[in-house]
Structure formats: C-alpha cells, structure tokens
Amino acid sequence: MKSWSSVPVVLMMSVSLVALTACEEPKVGASIYESLDQCKRDTFSTPDQCEGSFKEARNQHATVAPKYSSEADCQADFGAGKCETAPYKTSNGGSVFMPLMMGYMMGSMIGGRRSMMSQPLYRSAKSPNSFRTAENRNVGAKTGRTNVAKSATSRPTFKSATRSRGGFGSSSRRFGSSAT
Amino acid sequence: MQRIPMTERPNLAGIAAEHDLEYIAGKGITGWDESAYYQFTMRQIEEDIEGPAEEIEDLCFQVVDRAVNNEEVLRRLGIAEPFWDYIAESWRNGEKNLYGRMDLSYQGKGPVKLLEYNADTPTALYESAVFQWEWLEHATELKLIPQGCDQLNDVHESIVQTFPQLNIETLSHFACNQVFEDDKGTLEYLEECAREAGLETCFLAMEDIGVDDQGRFTDLDDRVITTLVKLYPWEWIMAEDFGRHVPASGVQFIEPPWKAILSNKGLMPLLWGMFEGHPNLLPAFFEDDPAAAAFADTGSYVRKPMLSRQGANIEIVHEGKTLCHSDGPYANDVHILQGFQPLPEFDGGYPLLGCWLVASKAVGLCVREDRTLVTGKGARFVPHVILD
Image (cartoon, rainbow over all chains, first blue to last red; front, side):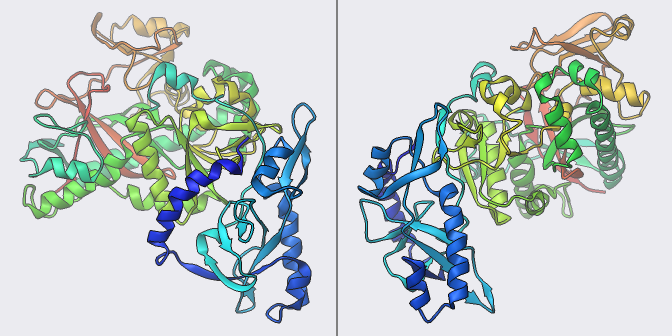
C-alpha cells in the first residue's frame, strides 16, 4: 500500500518544478472551508450552496481518500488522531484506514453555475497548515475565497488499497515486444 | 505505385534527435529509409486502398458479430472460456475502438489482399502520423520531391477527434512494457493525442498494475483504474495471472475486448469462410480443418501461427518448396494456412502497405519494406506521396 510518507521525495522534486512554472500554471477561483459552519458564515456563499457542496465533498470522501491497511502508517502521514476506519475491509477481513476529512473545496459561481465539483480536503502531518486534495495537491492554507491551480481542481479519483502487483507482464518478458 | 529514389534530407541526425528516434552514423534512422519514396495516384489511394480497407472493416465486424454468438468460433480462436461472455458483452455494448492497421499486399493494380489485421496493438503509429508527414513538408520545401505531393495521412487529427468520443470521464491510464521502444513510443504518442484532446492521462508499466480486494485495478498511487489504453495484446492479458480479474474490473479498455477476435490470425479463415471469393481476401484455413490439407496440396501457401508478432514463425511454401521460414517463439501455437500473394519487389525491397484505421475510417498509409518476403523486425519505413 502506498503511503504518503514516501511522497516528500517526489514533492521536493516537483516543488522546484512548480517554482519554475508557477507563473504559467493557470489558476481558478475556488472557496475553501474547514467546515460547513464556516461556509455558512461566509457572505460569498448561500447556506444552500454550502449544504450542497459539503454534501458532495462528504460523499466522495470515503472513495477518494488515500487508504492504508495500518493505522500507524496512516497516522504517520496525517498525524495522531487524524485517521478513521474506512468502510472497506481487506481480503483477510482486516480494517482499512483513511485520513479524516479536514475541509472541502467548492468552485466559485460563474453565471449561476459552479465552475467545478466540490471535493474533500486533507491536512498532512508534515505541513499541517495547508490543505491538500485527495490527489495530494497543495491548495494553500487560506480559507474562504481563494485561487488554486487549475490542475488541483480536477475530479479526484477513487483510491483503493492495492493487495498485490505484478500480475501482468510475464508474456512480454517471454515473447518480447507487443508490436505488430 | 512507383518507388522513386531520392536524396535524403540533410541533417538527418538532428531531425532524428528532435523526434527522439535512434540515429546510427552510416546507417541512418533506425527503421526509417528516405533514400526513396513510394508514389501512388489518387485513384490507387481512394479506390484500391481506402475503399477496400473500410469494406474489409465491415466484413471484420460481421465476423465479430458471428463469433460472439458462437462458442465454437471463440474456442477455435483459442480464447479461454472465462472471457467469452466478457468479449461478447463488450461487443453488444458497443464499446468503442480507436485504431488498427491492416497489412495489405498491393501490386499497384488489381485488388489489395488482406494479409492480416493488427487490430489490437499496432505500432509505427508515430512514424506514420507525424514523422512521415513532416518528411513530406520538409522534402517539398527543399524541393527533393515534386511540388503538389499529398499523403494519405489524417491519422493525428482523427485520433485527437476520436478520444473525446470514447466516453472517458476521469483520468485515463496508459500502459505497456516500457522496455520496448516501439511499444513505448507508440503509447507515448497516443497519450500525447489524448492530452491534446483534453484528457487527463497517466502512464504506468503493465507490471506495475495492482489489484485491490474487490478485484479493481490500481496504479502506483492506489488510484483505481477506470480507463486503460494498453499497448499490450489481449491474448497476453487474458493468459496472465491478473487476467482473471479483468472481466469484473470495471475498466474500459482501449482497444476493447472484442478486438481479441480481430487481432488473431484465425480471423483470416473466418473471413474466408464467410466471404469466400471476396476480391480483397486470400483463401485461408485453420490447419486442423480438413480443407487445409487439400489447400496445402496446391503447394503454394503461407503458414502462420494464430498469434505471432513481428513476422515471427512464418513459413512460405511456393510450388512445393519452402521459400522462406522465419524463426520465433510461437512454433507450438496453432497455425493457419493462407494463400500466397507475394509482395511486389521494387529494387530488392518488398513493400507491405499498412492502412491505418481510426474509429474504423481509413485515414493513413504506411509502407514498410523488408529485404525478405516476410516483413519482420528488420523492416524499414519508407514514406509515400500521392501525386497524379
């Protein structure tokens, strides 16, 4: 199972890339809230929008959050007390763990339509001030109206707990190229 | 159809480097030969190649339609029983196909003959779609070829236009065995086309694909794979350990599972069985079919394994004598016999035409030339033009 603790090496490399390309990365407007209440207190959003977006993010949480077969691994990435049991079981009946949802991000209203789907946000143990998407994209520490990289707003994918790898590839090792 | 010698563009080494192609001093670009080009007339392209290729595609679909309703046919093709329903469903649900390459024998006149259909994992796509087109533009500019030359080449635009029609909703994964340049190059190019079409993509090696407890496939970040564009043959996927998870994986595969019926050389006897005498088909029989013995008695035929790749294990018998016999790892496979339609010879080379189909439309042409009648790994891509 992949853990986020293995991520920083990759992140360090990509941070320098981001620094180089930051000025070119297109940004889009979004609103980030720690909780439904915080959203409702914000004058930019109506209570209905807050409710709807929160629900949309909450509904995705269990599927898109990163998964762990060990609670300790999960806490190493997200902090003590910051993990919960996921509604899944491993093949031998063991529990699956995932980080708590720490906030959510909703699209801004453009001409009465929201610019993107809402999605849940997380905070890692290494940089607890920033929010991260389920795709491990940093969307900053600011709540309320903000701008985030457009690439961070794509729909999060379903995360699962990989049981095994390497079940494909043997024919190619035997026969060679797939080319025809 | 003529083979016209020409002067190579200057600085081929630099051009190769720009396109990430291998260049060896004294030998040129690996797999590419621009010391000549093939010239076709518009009539040859439209009437002898494009039209017949799309007609053959239609015949192929009739074969698939029959195969998915006939267990005996699926068994003959060597497709394992656990995949019968899966393949049939993929066809009945209209799962969309992206591309394929038909290998055709053509003499410049008379009907083209289908030798086989690389319907699942065709390569040389980048050379056909991009490199060959750029050659045409450069060579025209440098006046190395006559003014006004065209090319059968809408491959790039067609692929970019087809991706959005494949109903891909989220991230799509692209997988192959990256050790092989042909495979990796072709897949990277497809990925580039998908991005140009606005899709989000992620590359991973076939061997890095994981499986979760529900039998869904995952990538290295534990993301569940929902769409897999694979440059990896269906027969290998079905035979390998994780193949058993495929039918319930919920993955949209490109090419779709029903392509397993077309990429198999068992297609050739199936086509002949249904459309015997069709001008673009050669007689073909499964080797264990009694009709094959009578056919072999004519003394002229080609014997091919059902699932070989890159011209491996192909034997050509003409007038009772073996003309050619290539090696390979597929000798123990079930074989078919097919009528022998020799490739034409031009200056010691034997050109094999490849007609590219994208979303079942004939949109591109490549000519690959080998020094033997069997087009194998040593084949070189020779560009083409259309000029009347």
